[in-house]
Length: 395
Image (cartoon, rainbow, N blue to C red; front, side, top):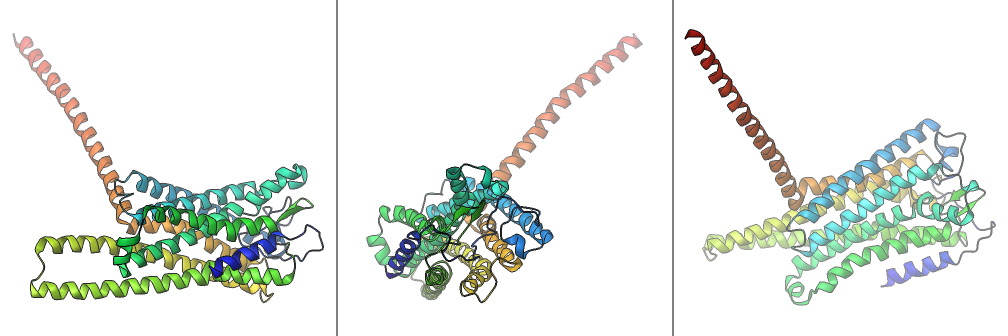
């Protein structure tokens, strides 16, 4: 509650920022680049990046980000389709949460692609209200950042749900209610809006035909305070939850395995009960292994970006440079890697993929058999007609 209160106070402080040009400006950007209307030194309109990045490197990073967005959209759409069409997609709460995670990643990748496409918008020739709307939602990557931050909140929800279910199993069975699942779906969006959408809208505006993101704060103190809060809320905090939660979970699972092994040696457990326990334990381990890999992917993809971001807040590192853009590409790649982890590790998605492959192979086999059967009668009829022709000729 204290962290949430501090986050809301910082957000409200940021929203109270006046719109004067004398406000403290900073070249801080939490995504690929700040968008401008026109740029002559860069192959694309990349705002401040044109002053710090060579045109060739800027174009390479731009193309890499587009590839990540497209692949992320396709991969997340495939995983989402598999989860929605699977019969067991709603069998447990964690399946609902993982489906929601896929929706968040798909939304982030889709809006990232649209933002990159709309970077060529000339704000100077656009109506002021429409220009501000496009700047907030696309130029400043507000929706992309909101969905990405919500995905981090969703991972924490999954970790907490797994922790309570396995470490405190009795309390989970006695006190867990369906409304908690709905809250677990709503909370990530509140977390993403509070840490992404509201601060971006409050500190971004169109000035002289350029969409300037995260440049307008009340003072330098608020800028640094919000940078520290973001570092804690979006990286160190989630990382602590992941490490603590899964370390406790693995310790409990290890202890349970020892107890099961001892009971099997003593012969106190029936074969049917043992098979059921092993199946349930295997399912739990599959879920835990999948979410751990997703958490590790988050930690590795965002470590450079979050560290560099906090350094720029204290002017230790330069603002928009090639390192910042490169780390931004790494952070976006996390939303592209998650669906591949689900497709290769998550049992529901793997099972759905196997069923689809079997259906395709079976359909091709049936078509080949039908073609063979249709060709065989024609061949036999031709052979019979040839025999009749030879007989008639002999007569």
